[in-house]
Image (cartoon, rainbow, N blue to C red; front, side):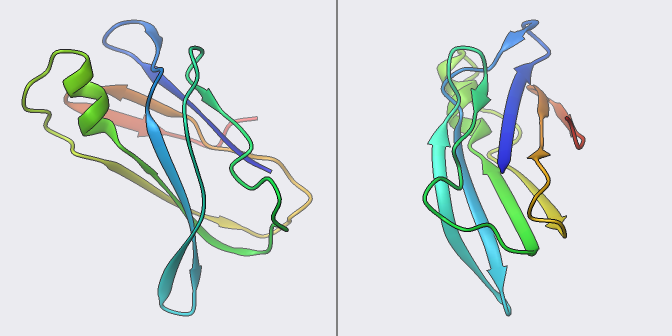
Length: 111
């Protein structure tokens, strides 16, 4: 399972309404396998629903530009955030949170 959680550290609140795309690298190409939007708690699960997860390199792309424009920032610095990570054991839960502000972000492997 792959899940994410976006927190807007500048507002001290979950970031709801962030569009997220999940892709897997197959050979040298990226293939979309899931997408969704964070809920009112900033959470998004079910990105792989209906698919079998396999070992490989995955990428989460967060549409931070649209999110920040919706928060009143007319010209966001980061148009999007891409987080690329490796899945080795498909039986594990891969939780990849994003801590977001208008001029910075960080991420980590959560639980």
